[in-house]
Length: 200
Image (tube, rainbow, N blue to C red; front, side, top):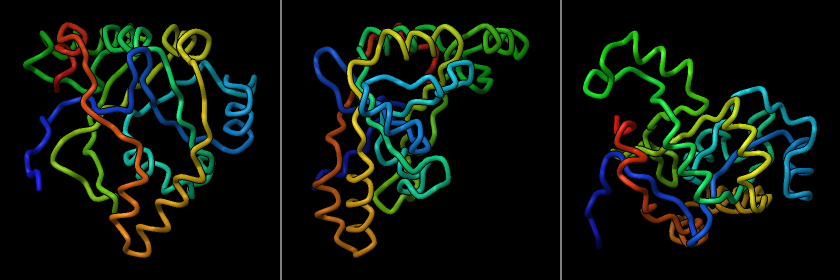
């Protein structure tokens, strides 16, 4: 058994040479049309900040296994790695870190000006308990949200049935079968310059 813990701040995701998969949860009126068309419908509010998450289990924690109101449809959104890298380079941490920011005033200014923001929240296990290492959450607004919707997305899949199946197995105590169904997330290769300002 491998007991080596991942680094505290490490992006882990399902990815290919060209794309990375992130997760979001929406009400069915948005999620289902998005999955059918491969792009968000006009009812999707691009002026709002939208949060994307490379961790399937963190998404399950956030949406309660697709049971929370207005989060009943879970989407796996495949986006270009170039777009993901752009968002990271142009992101600001959502909280002030003295070791990374000159002072609190300059951090607040960066946060106002950035169209993307990052927070690191505890990763989750199959029972949705917190783990010692962190999971990346990436918030997109303004230019970043527009690029996400119009340029970066290469495919959208409704993975609500997967969420429901894994949840049922966890509820039944069959963690082995539940784990076998999880998307295969592995360390995501990212240039140090893209994330050095985000290592909280």
